[in-house]
Length: 155
Image (cartoon, rainbow, N blue to C red; front, side, top):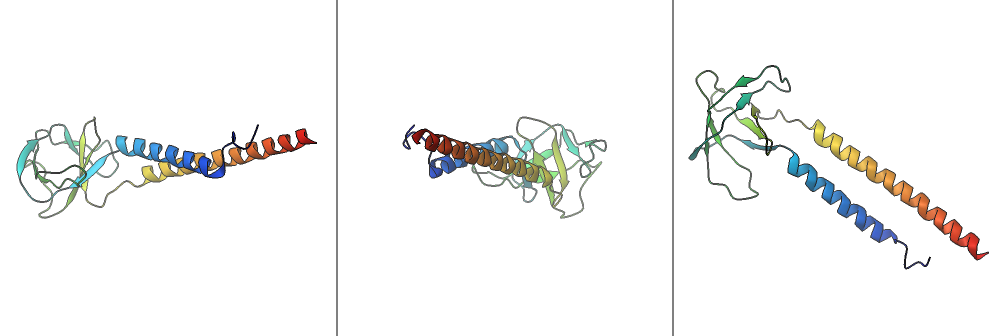
C-alpha cells in the first residue's frame, strides 16, 4: 500500500469536519425553535397550546384556540409574535414569554423568557465530541499499526 492510498491528516480532519457539520445540521433540524412575543400584526390561530411550568409535564394547562398575531417574517429571521391569551390565564403586563415550537409536533409550549433548556444541546455536543475524539484515537492507532506493518515488511 503506497502513501497515495492512505488518508493524510488533513483529509481525515476534513472528513471529520463534514461528519460533524452533518450531525449538527441534523440536530438543529429536529430541535425546537424559539421566538418571543412582542408587537401585533396578521392574525394566525394555533391549537393545542399549553402553558407549562418549567420542566413539569404534569402541570399542563391547555390554551386551545389561542390567537397569535404574527408580523411578516423572512426566512432565517427570528419570529417575533404577540400572543393574546384567553381570560383564564394571561401573562403579567409587558412580560416577555418564550414560545417553543418543535417542528412537526404539538403542543406548542408557552414559558417565561429566560427559562431555556440548555442541557440537551450540551449533552448532544458532548456526545458528538466524545465520539469524534474516540474516532480520532482509533484512527491514530490504526495508522500507527499499518505504519509498523509496512516497516516490518520492508526488513
